[in-house]
Length: 240
Image 1: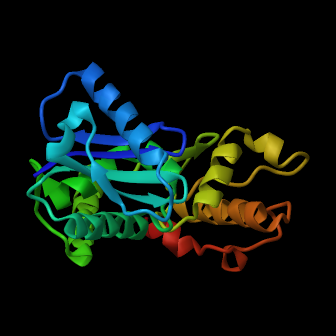
Image 2: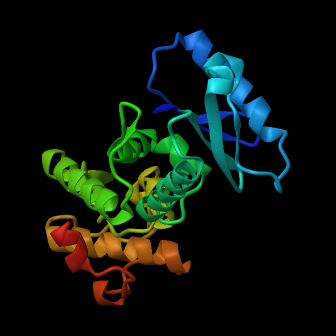
């Protein structure tokens, strides 16, 4: 049985903790600190499992871990679990995270902790392993995401009084840039020019495309650029 799953960085900061036995909050924090102390001092060329700390059960339990860049993935298990089987499970977990987040990093675990817990729940429930096939796990997560999107349609972003729906395919860099654009009124973005017409969905999509093209390419101005020249077509915005 799996007793706990812990993820912490090289400095011992917990990024995910899931306990399958009841511990008080203080005891959980002590277990995380004790586990980090046991795991972090080990050399890279030694095996990836060791006896558990006293707080998690001592010699009757094992700590099985993998170290990836800045993160430790640690499974605390009892003696009935196979060390190699748990190592494979950790690998499947990491590969699934990487597939769902596209090159997963520590920040993904911080800002999308609910999604990480959903992925973990597809693999382990109540301390028992449910699924080890990455494709099946990803399929279930995709189905959950589609259901959430259907129940909670995206909220519009606003440029002045103009509502704009950002398509899911928009890159994270462009989205960050769009948040910067939202902070400025249209007269600030287009000083000395006639303001664009905002009377139709087509014109709003064209304006959005042109703004994002200027953001991505570094080319200022909007009036001389058509939506067909933009890096993202207006049809994609209208269908979002």
